[in-house]
Amino acid sequence: MSATQATVDWTNDFDAERIRADFPILRTDPDKPLVFLDSAASAQKPQQVIDAISDCYSREYANIHRGVYDLSARATAMFEGVRESVQRFIGAAQAREIVFVRNTTEAINLVASAYGRANVGPGDEVLITEMEHHSNIVPWQMLCEQTGASLRVAPIDDRGALCMQGFCDRLTERTKIVAVAHVSNALGTVNPVVEIARLAHARGAVVVLDGAQAVPHQAVDVGELDCDFYAFSGHKLFGPSGVGVLYGRASILSKMPPYQGGGSMIRSVTFEKTTYEDIPHRFEAGTPDIAGVAGLGAAIDYVTGIGLDRIARYESDLLEYATASLAKVPGLRMIGTAPEKVSVSSFVMEDVHPHDVGTILDQYGIAVRTGHHCAQPVMQHFDVPATIRASLALYNTRGDVDALVAGLLRVRELFG
Amino acid sequence: MSAELRELYQSVILDHNKKPRNFRELAVANRTAAGVNPLCGDSVTIYLVVEDGVITDVGFQGSGCAISTASASLMTEAVKGRSVAEAERIFADFHTMVTSDPKTDAVHESELGKLSVFSGVREFPMRVKCATLAWHTMNEALHEGEETVTTE
Image (cartoon, rainbow over all chains, first blue to last red; front, side, top):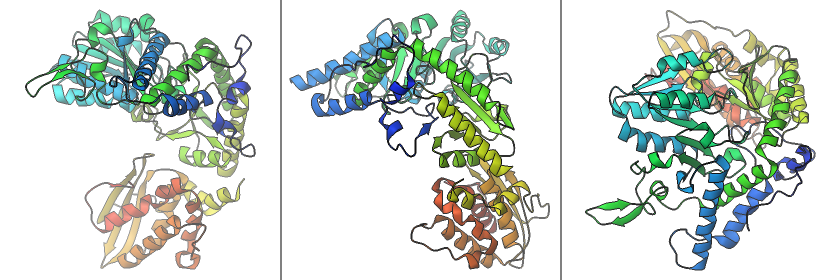
């Protein structure tokens, strides 16, 4: 199977119903429709992605970069072809700047370990923000513990937007790494990452962007962002779990020591000395998720076939509708009202714990995330134990929003 | 509203969630333990006064969902005045009730009295830990554990 072609003519307006038809899980039981509002945790998969994985195993599968036989050559060509798709997808200058990893978490850990340990020392600082996911906090804490560096945290305001003054105050000549979410998973806030990168570079720091929540919602161009590293996961982009991407600027990536040792990442091995492969293979030790990469390629083809700008416009309209609809639910308080947001609505309900809300909504076939969203500092900032998060993706509709609101009114009814 | 939901959120549970009983720190407690559910961040601290093997007073503090708050509240009522051995037996029966298979196992409501309002929890496996957090924590306090209890 070659790259998936979108079967729909997208020159017309966005047709969510036709998109929904591509997602088998959304049409499994007509009597109990699934209102899936948890795509920020992990998105559902279109048939095109499922087919690409299945076809890989059925027709194209062998280990890559090894065999001289035709099947291995074809699998290798597919794998490297997806690398080029990713390069185009995020506007990287070269395919060798694309490293396949397991997920965003692994990408950030790779940077913290390989770049961080070689470039960060005692007295240095790593600057993050208060809205980060735990995966963009803990690897830096670990790096700081190992190197004697300090972790600095730029504050957010009560809308959940980054305080730029607070950010600038903490950006100093000691700052070696600035690691920021492009889009906050718990709040939906879109950070001014171009400005952040400009300020950080002026201080000589490298810029790591956690793009996990950005790539499913808007076009990303790492050249325009001028970041040094950009990380995202396949599974939030309608691709399979188990595969993610680290973009690294070639001039930086090529100077970094390996992350993990093993097969594929070496040029020669003797017991006395091992020499390492060039980038990106230096960072891809062991057999990767080959079929997962095939699935990621199909996912990228799927969203680019529709058009990221078209998706962004549709979701922006949907978010506006959701925000207005949720405002009508008595006792509902939005958490995260930054002016620049993607389609994530995080909220709490007066006198009802988010977990009770989640259980009740589930009874109506509505899947939302409840909890701290791996962003406990955000919960502490807003002084809530947890929130209810409804995250909308390209396959959600105003009908889904209406179902959510109806479910929340039932919660209100039960809890008084 | 579904029968399962009505069963889970019975009026007794909603009432104890809104007005939790024995919701106070006991300065005179001689056994205390703190418990958290790392999955959802629910936390509870149990305070016990145990004299001659009898729980003469009990209180709790913390924050959590309706199920965990009501469970803690009803637990304090159920164990107050009971011997440690009786409290442990009630916990065992309670645990059996909320983790039993709703298809095959009957609930022996008479033995648990008011606590049988939690029988609906077994239809919601994701919520069992909410219902048992306070109990695990009390058990820890009774055994004078030093560590924070988790439901994991």
